[in-house]
Length: 286
Ligand SMILES: NC(=O)c1ccc[n+]([C@@H]2O[C@H](COP(=O)([O-])OP(=O)(O)OC[C@H]3O[C@@H](n4cnc5c(N)ncnc54)[C@H](O)[C@@H]3O)[C@@H](O)[C@H]2O)c1
Image (cartoon, rainbow, N blue to C red; front, side):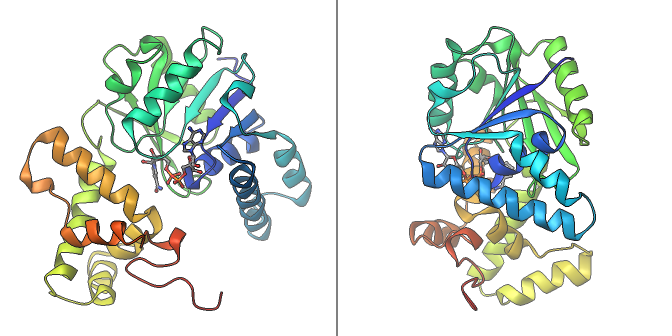
C-alpha cells in the first residue's frame, strides 16, 4: 500500500471526522462539500476537535498546525485532484445522491483509486454499481471518528481481495481496528443498534417511561456509556430514520418499522443535537 492522497466528500459530522483522522496520520486530504460555508464549518469543527486533543495531551499545538496544513477544502467535485488514492463518500444517507457522486467521479479520478462509502446501511453492492465495482468498498467509521476505534469494512459482491486487503492495511495505518462484515442491510453495527434505539423511542411513544428515565435504565442497568435516546440525538434523528427504513425495506420485515414518533420528529425538524433539539434540548446556554 502506497497511499498518500485522500478525498472526502461531505464535510458534515462524519466527513470532517474522517478528514481529521487521515490528516492526523499524514495523508493529504481534500475535503469537499456543496458550499463554502459548509466546508468552513467542517474545517472549524476539525480545528475545535484538535484543540480537544491538545487539552488531552494526545497531540501537541505544533501537531495541530501540521494536521490542518494537510487539509484542503473544495466546493466542487471537479476540483478533487484526479490522482487521489482513496475517495471516501460521507454525504447524507440517500442511495440516489450517493450513486450520482460515484457516477460523476468515475471518469475523472484515476483508475486505481479505491472508492469507499461511509454509508451506515445502504447496500455496498448497489452503490458499487455506478462505478468501479472491484475497487469499491464500505468503510463504516463510527461517530466521533477521531475517538472511536472501530471501522466496519464491508465487501460488495465484486470487491476484489486486493481492494479489501488494502483497506484493512489502511485502517491499521490510521490507528483504527477494522472488522470484516458482509453486505447485508445495516451490516452489524446498525442492525443491532438501531432496533434498540427504535425500541427506546417506542417506549417513550407508548409512555412506558420518560426520555430521561429510559436512558437511565440503559446506562445504570446495562452499563451503556450513553442512553439510547441521547445516542439517537447525537447520531441525528434523520440518520436514524433512514437507517430504520433501509432495514425495514431491505429485510421486508415489519419488526424493523420505524416508530411514528421518530418520523414525526424528523418531519418537525427536531433532528437532535445538530438542530438544537431532539429527545433532549441542546440550546440552553447558547
Ligand atoms: N452520524 C453518524 O453517527 C454516522 C455514523 C456512521 C455513518 N454515518 C453515515 O455517514 C454519512 C454522513 O452522515 P453525517 O452524519 O456526516 O451527515 P451530515 O448531514 O452531518 O453531513 C452530510 C454532508 O454532506 C454534504 N453533502 C450532501 N450532498 C453533497 C454533495 N453532492 N457533494 C458534497 N457534499 C454533499 C452535506 O452538505 C453535509 O454537510 C451517511 O451516509 C451516514 O449514514 C453517520
